[in-house]
Image 1 (cartoon, rainbow, N blue to C red):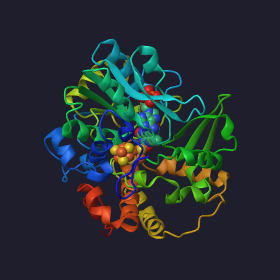
Image 2 (cartoon, rainbow, N blue to C red; image 1 turned 90 degrees about the vertical axis):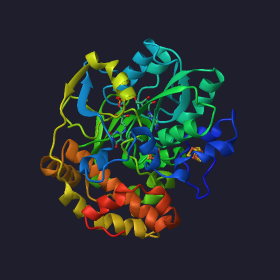
Image 3 (cartoon, rainbow, N blue to C red; image 1 turned 180 degrees about the horizontal axis):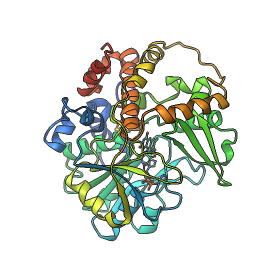
Image 4 (cartoon, rainbow, N blue to C red; image 1 turned 120 degrees about the vertical axis):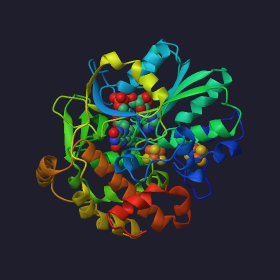
Length: 402
Ligand SMILES: Cc1cc2nc3c(=O)[nH]c(=O)nc-3n(C[C@H](O)[C@H](O)[C@H](O)COP(=O)(O)OP(=O)(O)OC[C@H]3O[C@@H](n4cnc5c(N)ncnc54)[C@H](O)[C@@H]3O)c2cc1C
Ligand code: SF4
Ligand code: SF4
């Protein structure tokens, strides 16, 4: 693994490419250049408005709504909107290849980088691989094949680094690169994943699908189809140790992938029984073109939920700051509260807590506060470089110190 001078690296895959010098790849690393700022200005002609509380959290958008595919793609993460857009983009010859991930045959949660060139290969990219993944490695194949139009599906670190590299160096200058972004947070290193999964579920060997849900529970689907639900509050305390996450992901300030042409997530959609509603943030004209490919396949709904969530943030912020500060804190192996009590608490919060865009607001602010103090207390000299300018504005809203 190549790393920037402070050891921050999300294994995005660019430095594994041999078609150009690794020193050039590192020059474009988001952990060297920082999040948003100039890159956002280059893409949109301006930075997000600090006077607009919604844009500060969700980034610049042309349109936002919730939606579900009328015919969900089986074994996709939610309803499979990303997979369908990518398949249609290839069918319509909008692109010649799709840079994404296949599942590893050794572990369903692990990824292998791929340049998918036909519908079957794109179909096989569906579903999350909740580990750091070298998506950008496949740029090398596209470059060597002389492709002129590609689609890249990636997390925010992938798309920041890719956009910088394409602008800075000649290699990809003539390539039209379309992008679909996933929201991404709390990702983990492969070496750490078995340890984490074992502490989340009683049966790690049969787990096939995992998601942190808006009902304050982790849902783990097992190979026999049953879904195990564990309240966040009942996970072992050791899973809240910031040390188990990659330093790169704890220094990440673009949860909602603001440089993607279109971001497709779920966190701002309300969780409804037996539905797989997703949250779409269309950001650029290219994003509009990508959405148009599957517009007729979607059931669309307006965003819902109340924006306000400050009491929930205020209740947790001092605990977050303390745990980021206390580098030597010992974490217990015990559950924070018993599972039955956790379900009651999750049920109450499900009724009175934030929903829809309020939940997205809460989740963005929670992670932004956590990451600000992580960098402040554990990597102080990177604070200025890494932290985008809207972050102090949001901290000030809650009266939190810089
Ligand atoms: C670690 C992680 C954390 C996430 N956290 C959130 C969250 O907090 N809120 C939220 O709204 N959404 C989050 N997502 C995204 C969300 O789970 C779905 O991937 C997204 O909503 C798309 O659903 P879909 O059914 O359209 O995806 P699908 O059609 O199944 O397509 C998913 C696409 O994402 C790609 N992909 C999978 N894993 C990775 C990875 N590790 N890196 C890069 N690309 C990958 C797949 O290869 C595929 O192309 C997260 C995803 C990951 C991997
Ligand atoms: S995150 Fe990507 S660009 Fe940065 S050091 Fe790691 S592999 Fe290289
Ligand atoms: S949390 Fe951030 S740094 Fe980590 S993989 Fe996701 S986008 Fe990249």
